[in-house]
Amino acid sequence: MDTFFAEIRTFASRIGTLRSILLHLALLVAFGIWIPRMKGLDFLDSPVLGAYACLGLIFAGPAAAQAFAEGFPTFQQAMARVFVSLLYGELVVAALLGAGIGTVYLTRRGGFVPTPDWETIARCALFGFGASAMLASLAAWVTVQFSHRAAMVCLRVAFFGLLILFYYRGQWLPEVGLTGAAACLALAGVFVELLRRACR
Image (cartoon, rainbow, N blue to C red; front, side, top):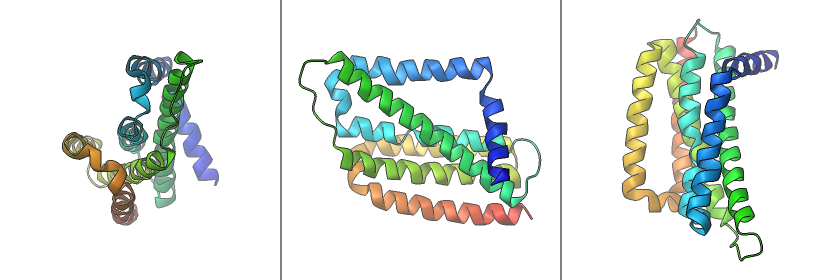
């Protein structure tokens, strides 16, 4: 537990700079206020909220790669760093979703606002969590085994592949959310085992 809290403190000091804070605020304004305000009630459609629920993978992977950029950790430290990166990605998602839904409700005060399909969003969120875990553990293993640069290349390829998949088959996300989450978590388990061996 001490290792976990130590990694949280290290991570917080890394993203606690003025530049990082301003970047996160800009992200919150753009994706949590401006886009929902522009889309209006369309923002509450399941495909849109489902896509938002999967955004954690964009943050967790790079955060994990950055956490391993220096030093050769023990496996316990490595797992703490992966978990902290995953937690960071999911907190960003929660903030963006909460701000976005809140923005729509506030701008439509007094008018009819449909209730989001929480079941579909939960399935998408499970897929997003699984994908975040997979990419964070992949980034951690590649960084430890090879280099930070190699991890970033792997993440870019993965992001590009997921972007193409979402563009052509995004409507399938609610239906395949649970299956996709299970597949991603299984791959995350493989990368964790590879990470364990690399940390010996």
